[in-house]
Image (cartoon, rainbow, N blue to C red; front, side):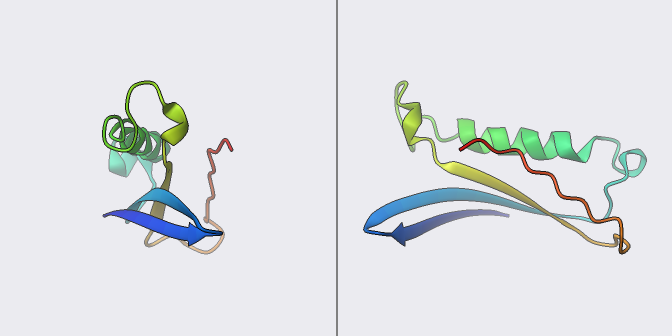
Length: 88
């Protein structure tokens, strides 16, 4: 699922793109790929897809924030994992 969200704060419009995915496991042997690499890949695709739609030319200051949320089903207590890649 991909959500496009618009927030209104202090008379300024803020936009963000949210990629939400549900996963049954994070086991590399079951998935056949590294889940965090997939999350980064799809997040960067959402950033690059903004070219000529959210910004044009080299006006990179207009790039909107992108969030990827992985909902991990079937994970036992104590196996929770949090990963954050950010730059403000």
